[in-house]
Length: 318
Ligand SMILES: [Mn+2]
Image (cartoon, rainbow, N blue to C red; front, side):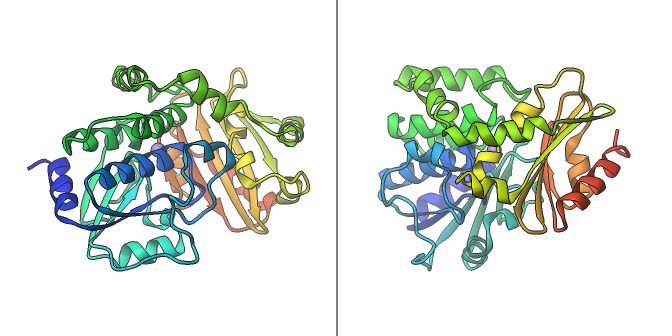
C-alpha cells in the first residue's frame, strides 16, 4: 500500500478528525487545511480545523465564518490528527502540538526536506511545490469531486508557495494542477489581487523603512524591521513577511536575508537563495529549516546580535 492509500484508509475509518496548520500561517498551510477539511466534511466526518496563530488579513478571503477552531474552546478526543505543511512539530504551536501529541493516530503531510517524520504516517515530498499539491492528490484518491470551495484554497496554496508561479519549485505538474483549478472556475486575477494587491497604506511605509536599510555584504543583501515599527504603523506581524520577496529582487546577489523582530529578543530570520547557495543548511546551523532556496530560523537574542551571528555563519556555508 502506498503512503497515500494508508492515509486515505486511516481517514476513512476515523470520525473525529483534527487538522492543524503551522504558526505564522501562510497560503499553503491554510489552503491545504481548508481544502482537506472541507473535503472530509463532504464525507460526513466531524472535522476540526485549528491554527494557533491569527490568520493574516490577506488570507481571510478564503475563510467562512466560524470555520476554524478558536484558541479558547478547542475540542479534544480526536481519532486522528493531521499536521499540514509543518516541517517541524514545534511549528504546530504550543497547544497545537499538545493536541497533536494527545491524539492516538498522527498523520504528517508536508513538502519540507527537513521534516524529520514526527507522525505515525509520514508523507513528505520535498519535490512538491506546495503541500496543497499533495492535498489535491489525497482528495482525488478519496474520490471527492472538486468544486470552487476546494479549488480556491488549493489554488491559493500553490500560488502563494510558488511566489505567484515565479519560484524554482514551479514545475509543469504545478502548472497543470493550476490549469485544472482554473478550468474549474478559479479566477487567477481575483486571487492574485487578494494576495498581493490589497495592502494598507502603512504597509508601504514599513517597506520604505526596510528598503532604506538595504545593506550589501559581499553577495548577501539584508535588511531588518523592528517590532516597534510594525506596532506603531498599526500593522500585524504578517506585513513583514513579504519583505523577503522584495529583498531577493536585488541584482547580483546570492542570498537575501530579512531579520524581523517578532518579540523582544525573538528574531525571525528569513533566507532566500538566488544561486547554488543552500539556505536550508544555514538555517539548520541555528536549529531552523526549510528548502534549499527558501528557509528560516529563529534567534532568541537582540536584533543586533541576530544580524551579527547570522551574517558570520552565512559566510561559512557555500
Ligand atoms: Mn508550503
